[in-house]
Image (cartoon, rainbow, N blue to C red; front, side, top):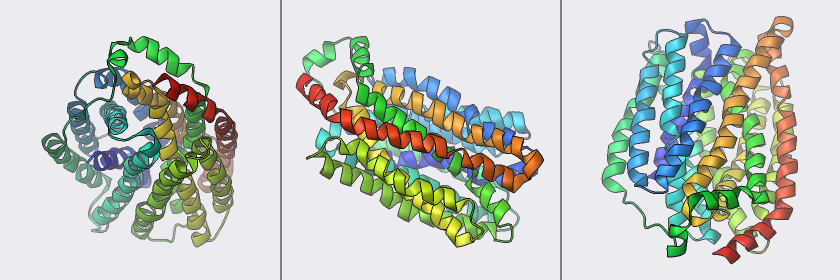
Length: 409
């Protein structure tokens, strides 16, 4: 159920990027305005609200918090389809961000209570399958609604938003609150002390910064993918493209996410540094493929390059989410994820799509819409390379910090 809720989280988060060409045409927006919608408008309150929500989740019913949050973000997604202008759409995106702030921190805390540390990367990878499945459903729902010919992006927003409200009811009726796995000493320990201890853990910061840098680039790629393909291959049927990317996300990307958790848990038993080393090695394969793809004039080579980046990037979700919990004192697990996501989403989700949008608008004046977008995407090589370096350093530090955490109980 938590994986399904997370899928709806990503349906509503990524639908704006998938429908971007239609929204741009309908509302007469430029690339910078689209970048703000895909990035910073959503991310600011999403990250800020995550902190107080996590504080509540470490004390009160996590199921109730997720139920309310799911209802809120799904409702605002549906309302987005009724937006009459740019300001109204921006306000709806802010509403979606506020709602989604209550989704992942409570869910991670629940999963950590249900699985031992040696199983957490696999369990978190199962939860993270909500990402490729959610993006798949967003693509396929868009293709289904738009294939009728008369429908538009507004119909898609309403169609993907309303089912989330029904799912919230099912969640509340079927999922029970897990027992918190804390000792009496951990329950009595001031949370502030636990948070300070967490923030003094070098490898926690390494995992945060590694996934943040990579996600900065990946959120930009996902947010501008459809714009790139529509501009580069204008003769290709857009509904067909939506179906292709939907299938890729639901199969190959999902395999990458699942494999990342399973491999990290197995490799990590003999080498704890594997939780960071695996993402570094995977990105060394995917990033060059993507950079070659955006300069290719072959449709299938471009699709292959984007796909390889997705598959290899998917490997970091399970390990990173698991380390956010395993390196955290037991009484602040939801807060650990919230702080993790505060850095991740403010910089990556807020900055990545916005960065490419602003750069693309800048380059468009001299290079045109297609080449301007490609020039902006080229800059993503920098955060990708930095991510590889940070994950590499973290792989050397993790064994020491994991042993220290285990010694503290």
